[in-house]
Length: 92
Image (cartoon, rainbow, N blue to C red; front, side, top):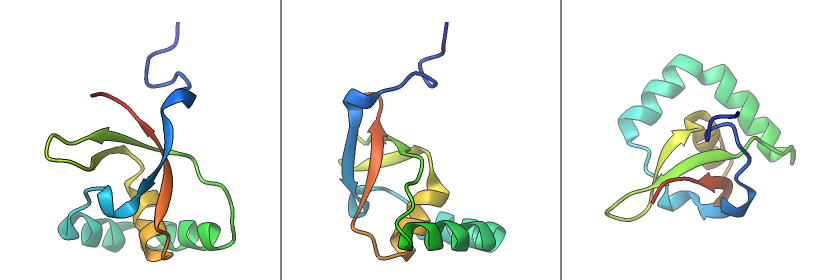
């Protein structure tokens, strides 16, 4: 039996505005310092139209979303000037 994290959640796949995804400036700077090359490659992939693995988001009580999986992809999409990202929404 697969864990719920590994099951496909196609019914929960949506386009989410990157403005609604919570990534603190501190977290963004930390990830960019540590993984600049990886982020740059992801950004190039996005800019070249390559499909990325969906990020996994959880709704915040105050609105918007927290990232469960995919911080690097969210940051790369923001740096690429994207407005939306394909995501799987989990939780309530």
